[in-house]
Amino acid sequence: MPASRRSEMKKQLKLRFGRLATPLAVVALKVHTRLTGTERARIIVRNEQSEILLVRGIIGLDWSLPGGGMNRGEEPIAAALRELFEETGIYADRQQTKYLMTVPRNASPVGYTAHLFGVSVPRGALPARQHNTHEILELAWYPVDALPDELSPIVSIGLQALSTR
Picture 1: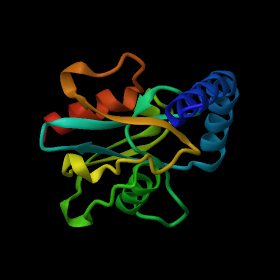
Picture 2: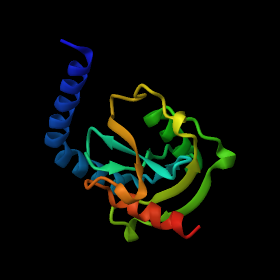
Picture 3: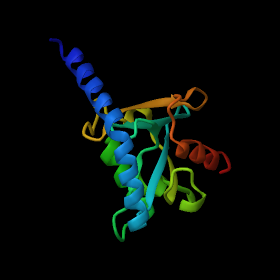
């Protein structure tokens, strides 16, 4: 069996698993966030063609911004850059990363406090081979006017914050 066929079969298997596990995982994440108050950091990554980088996790299945939960005592910008590297393999310069806004949990449709940042990187900064296949199903550059349908609300919030800067 060709490697590309095996790769597509693995992706489809992960997608099916994600569809089954997502409802339970989302509830567990909401409970965890409520009990621990864990905040998250997200980052809008743009390239020289004004595309944005979106990730699609195995759990959740919506396309979203790279990012995730902050570790205890971790600064939001450090969490955003750490998560960006963990999920995509992209290393971004802290000095080039701009704070956009913080969305409080009670004002957020995603149910958690989100610290949003923005950074520009060359399109080629994304490794040719997917960096994290354990939690990320796929990732891709998208023109802002051609985003996928299955989109996390945090993407719209981030794009709106970016447009006001």
